[in-house]
Length: 276
Image 1 (tube, rainbow, N blue to C red):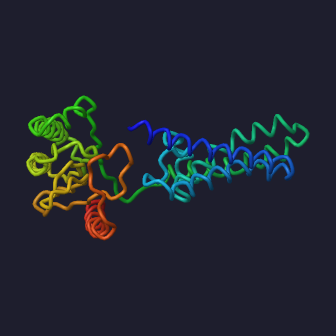
Image 2 (image 1 turned 90 degrees about the vertical axis):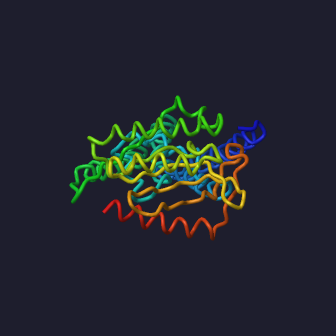
């Protein structure tokens, strides 16, 4: 990532966080204890939500992502997305901080801080025990050793596609409902069609759809970051990415909303039919 882009992103995040801390201190000093406990989580969550409208990568960097491995708390994302997770992340340290600063009101602080977390944990625990009408086996595959080779050249890219195809065939005994492969790891730009054909053959062999991220060049000459859904015995569907991360997606064409939306609709409909 270019140093200028990285410095801009870090600096802007630091300024926003500093403003949140200053406002939190102001509210906590004059407001009732329970309001003070909620001030930091609400301000942090609001700042992340609003900041997500500015850069093209949305909620990238939000504190809520630190809870992805805490399954009971992770379930609140079904209600409020990553914002709900960020609220939970910020609530605990704020509760502890006020507990130490104003020990005389520790009961009010403890209740205000513990109640939302307890509700979230109970909700998550109950949700994790729910049964489902059907289950699907989703195979997620990423091979770090091949990441550099994917950009080394067209021949290397074909080798990467073949290596992944071999691993996909090895999944046949598990009967996956769908196989999901990494973003822009296939194609070598000018060999996207050949790479897609190699992966499609592997999907036919295990009788499962494959979602693969391709580095491709359109007939018009545009280099795009695309996701292709390859379903055995059906036409391949493609989504062209339009929200590119600055500095990391240099050289790719940002697709228009109209082009991306039409592809997204077909991709979503097909993925939904597979799920059911």
